[in-house]
Each structure stands twice: as structure tokens, then as C-alpha cells.
Length: 370
Image 1 (tube, rainbow, N blue to C red):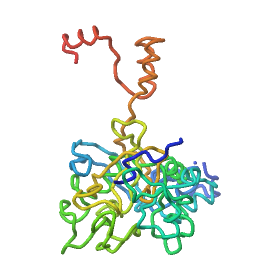
Image 2: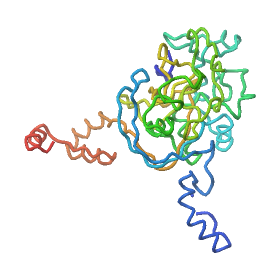
Image 3: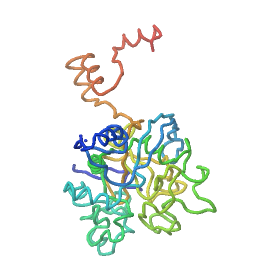
């Protein structure tokens, strides 16, 4: 069981005018392009290098075992996405600049897979996910000490993804970096590479293995959770460039760590969608999740664990989902102000739905208006 399947927290840009007139003209001409690359407030965007994803229409979803059986055609405008998940060094720059404290630090603990823990830490940690004792609640575990007290990021600063990151943490970083979190559509489209519909960003897009049976992603091999054989070259979290980039130049989109998006989880407005699976997932879905570019799950915005990271985007893109309207608020508005009040509320949230009484709905149907 992935801890993402349970609720993990119970408590809840003008720059100075150049001296040269020609330089000023050049800057004016280049400004829109710079903005597209994430320039904000007169300073370059932070974090991983962004790669350009061209506009197109692609197919979202298409694999039941990955959690996305339904398909949908989505049209996206050009946007830019981080070529890798945000690394530990990237996140340290944010923390140094803002003195930000992650939610794991605030809670004082986070979940870690037991096989990644030192015996000394494991012996002092007696809380775990109900029904999944391999996920241990470790006091003092957070991004800088991912395996709890005594662990460090030595040798993992530059090339490993930051983890123990909640949606709220990720959103704050992206805003500081002059970017934003991707929609699920933006994430999956970029993850696929140039193919408009596939499960993997390598080979023919349908085979979980690379040429000659080579491993192309960091997932679990062996009996879970007892032993990860490390046939892909990694036991636990691996480097963000451990495997080749896809045809867009984007790395590490399947396995390794889950990545947050900006979209609410369908049917559960209190949860947010994550993509791509992690190192504890499987090739075929025999345990945990089947790891593909379609792989998805939902979790609460304050949740973060040992296998949760993120990357950022900028530009127009698109394809985002809206959270369901607040039903309690709609009921209260209907009681106090009637249909007009509800219609005004829906309009203020960007929804174009028309509110009707049962009689109005029946008349509209009989008139062929619906």
C-alpha cells in the first residue's frame, strides 16, 4: 500500500531603462519571449532548466491499471516545463531565500519506507500506516533529513529530487521560482514526449522495457515490501537523470517519485492529483501502482512523504480541471438568495453553468434547448 492512498495528516516584473536607446528597443522586443521562459519581477526564474513543449492536441489517459482508463482529447498551448523534478539543491535555494518551513517540519514527522531506515531510527519509530506497516511515521524526517535523524543529503544535493514535499510546499516553491505547478494534462503531455498517446516515453511507447530489455525507470523489482532487487540500478530514490530524457528533453517522468499537479482529484475536491508513480510501484501493477505516464492518484494538499516530489511549469499550456463547487455554500445561497444568488456564485468561479428550476429544466428539454 502506498501512503498516498490514505490521508496522512490527521491534524489538521519594469527593469531599469538601459543607457542605450537601441538596447531599450531590443529589450522591449524580447520581453514577451523572456516572460514565456518564466521571467518574473525582473529576475530569471529559479530551479531546473525549462524545456519548451509545443502546442498540440493529445490524448489524456488510456490505461485502467494506471488509474486513468478514460481518455480525453485535450488541446494545449505552448508552455515550458522543468526538465527534471526539483532537486535538493534547488529547494535549498528557496529555503535560504525565504526561510520557508515545509509542512513535514511543522508536523514534526513524515512517512518513510521502513527498508530505507537505519535500524536505530526504525527501533524508535512505532507508528505506521494502518494496514501498511512498511510506511513508518518518523519523527524529524523532512526534506533535509529524508530518512530521519542522522540522515543527510551528502552526495544527493545536485542530482536527487527533493522529497517529503506537500502540495502546499510545492506551490510555494513554484511561486517563488516565477512558475506554477502543472495541470495534469500539461504534466502527462510533456511526460509522453512527441507521441500523442502512449504509456511510456521511450521505444514504441507501449513496452515497459527499453531496447534489449534495458530498464528505463526506477521502480520496485522483487517481493514488495520485503526486498527491492535493484535490477534497474537503484534501491530507493535515484538521480533525476538516471535514465535518458524523452523526445522533448524531459527526464524522470515514470517512477522514482510522485509529482504534484495543480488539478483537484476527481470526485474528491479536498485532494489534489499526483502523477507518474514512484520507486515503490511496479511494471505491471501486481502491487501498488502500474508505473506509466498515465499513472495518477489523489492526496490531500498537506500530505508529503518519502516518495513525493514535484516540478514546475510556465507559459499558457492549459487543460486544468476545476474543483467541484462548494455544495454547502450552494445550499446556503439557494436558501438565502435563490437561483440568482447561486448563478452569480457559479459565474464568479468561472463556471458557465445555468441554474434552472425543475420546471425550467423540463421546458428547456421539451423545447430542444438541451
